[in-house]
Length: 288
Image 1: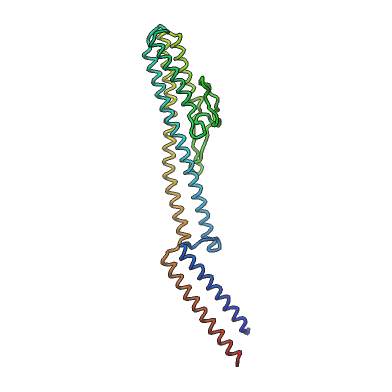
Image 2: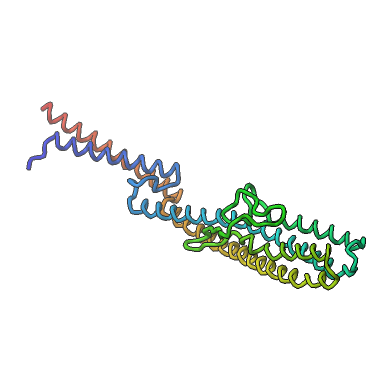
């Protein structure tokens, strides 16, 4: 096969174009510190980078979910602590109010105090974070408790994902949680209005039962908060590891990038020199 001048020129031109592209890429790597900027740079590594970044985004969403859940559960924990205090105050009133006369000033004062405790329980049952009520289940945009303590929410337990396949309950259902406390407070008010001292003291049993219900719920809340904290630590480590792997794939050592740029510049200069010699030889041959 005879190699013509035209074929030789095309080959040299193609080689020069390749050298220019290599120089452009080396310059970009030196400037940005990134070896993989698009799929065309390295399809295999680019695919791994996209997979790692997708996993890191999922983890970031789980961490945001954990922060959201922590805010709600912390507010619930504070509310339940206040409920426990109200129930302790009610038990103290039931234990210390011994007058048999409903019109006795001490008994009247105790009744007023219990009524105030009922108002507090309703307010705590209507605890809100942002625009959402904590204890209303799925009915989170309207108060779950009416002024008389009637529950109008539902029994939905809202869930949030804090890990791959790991769900966490965001709430306790308000009717089951507060129902015993509301009923026990109502019974104490009735006993203070019309009952005997024995009737008053008897309400302490239901108040204690309601206290135990709240304490169990608060323990569950604390367990959920601990689970979020532990999960957050694991997720942070995993996310850091994924991003380090991504950076290893896409990044280039600055010193190596400069050396490569210099090498590509030298190679391009040699290519120009080669083309110049070939073109001069071709012109000389043509003029003979």
